[in-house]
Length: 59
Image 1 (cartoon, rainbow, N blue to C red):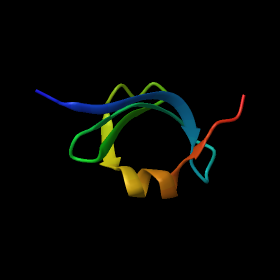
Image 2: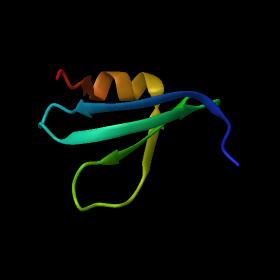
Image 3: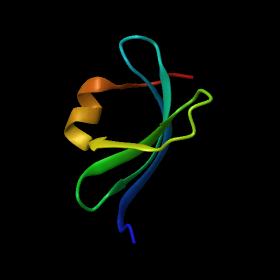
Image 4: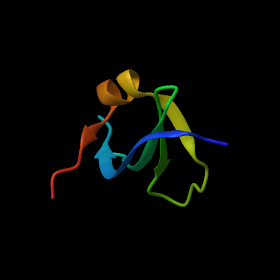
């Protein structure tokens, strides 16, 4: 069972322009996200690394 710290539910891009959708951050400090491609896997990364790797998409 995953305990949520906060819901994010926002789009982000990396330096290569890849679009990801950040789902939530768990209480252990990991951000769970998915790439907006045909890749259906869910990934996780420490929130401090996620903030360095990805920029919030401006609409």
